[in-house]
Amino acid sequence: MENQEPSPEITPKALPLVEAIRAASKGGALVTQRTLEKEFPDLNVHALITESGVKDLKKMEGSSDVYYFSDLSMTEAYAVFMYRINEKDPVRLIAETVRDDSRIYPRPTPVATFREPPFSLSARDVEEALGRMTLRPDLEDIKRSSASNGALYLYSSQFLSEAQGDALTEWFEVGVRENP
Image 1 (spheres, rainbow, N blue to C red):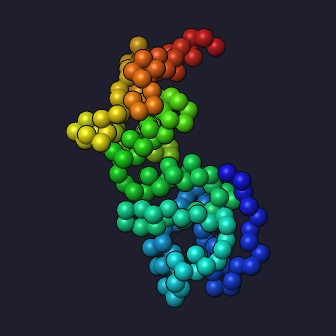
Image 2 (image 1 turned 90 degrees about the vertical axis):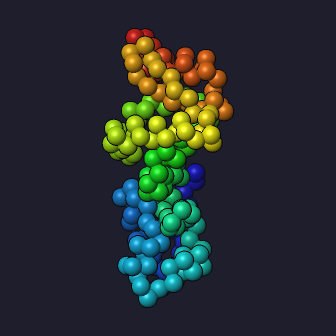
Image 3 (image 1 turned 90 degrees about the horizontal axis):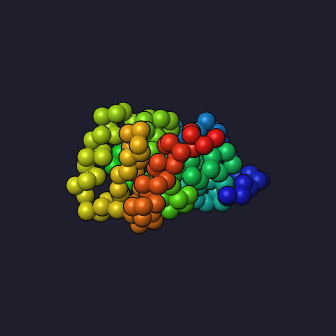
């Protein structure tokens, strides 16, 4: 993603909103429309941001709120992670992250990843999410693979075959360490 220069024509009314979004992004956080409306109750947040024409501000529609970030200091990929975390749906978070990893890189995803930042899910949340995933037909493409050391990985069968998922799991978990 190419970073743009800040727009030189930000209206005085929109400036505090733009600055708040940019500051949050610099700190690694998204800003919700609800938060901005509480912080700036006299402003029509959505309209001012939309009409500002500031190119670095990006919007993501969530299930219960709208999220904003600035791509001057936050990548879209990281913003997507933060969006998924903020939506508080561990099943969707895990499934979409696994699908992205399988499609983009292509590689399986260590389940342990979801216990680490930026996800920071508890072991219980991860286990419960994995259990619920097996009950959902729309997630039947999410498959499990175990390395010879017992580490659990997930991959999407939409993008990786079982043989690829298993081989890559073993390679990333064991092979890389044994073949420096």
